[in-house]
Length: 257
Image 1 (cartoon, rainbow, N blue to C red):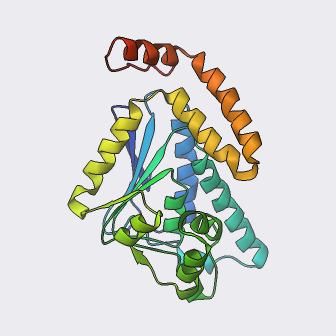
Image 2: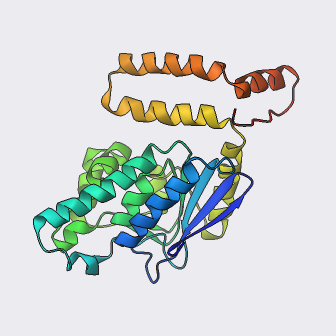
């Protein structure tokens, strides 16, 4: 496609960001990402997306040179809104997106990672939102997602100092699900993706929907929605297969139906 390449195998789409030297999140990356999500959303051969960066970094941030081409504050706001919409779509995407982060995920790169459902990192990776170092602020949802993951005080510290944390620290804080030595990262990510890909796509989508639903609803509204989804899922062929497989003491073979 250009800066994003895709390799599909065993219901996993491995998406690699190749925008050297730092895999900066240029506008062309966001546009390709949008097109790729369009392609994979209804692809029955894709149940999990595994996102990684080629070269030294996952993504070291936005393409700062592009900022000099924006003429006014309205243009910057439009850029922010576009990036927010792309990442909001990723967060609510019906198929799990796993980020495998090595090297660095900074600025827009971390905002991209935080919009994924799961983040796995190397122990020495650098993660941060250093925008204030440039006299600007995060614009792709980082100021909202980071405090949800690490707490308000730590999020403010990370943004106000512009200092990144290590992958090991990120895992301890909840920003990452797990941290691994660099040579193990991708194998661990593939292993996790494989486990998820064996699940019923309908039940995975329902859980993602419920996690999104609760963002702006009360607890009561959320559990009522859970009950509604619970009933719908029980009507699928995959649910029948899962229950029958349990009774027969075998592994279920989910077809996505």
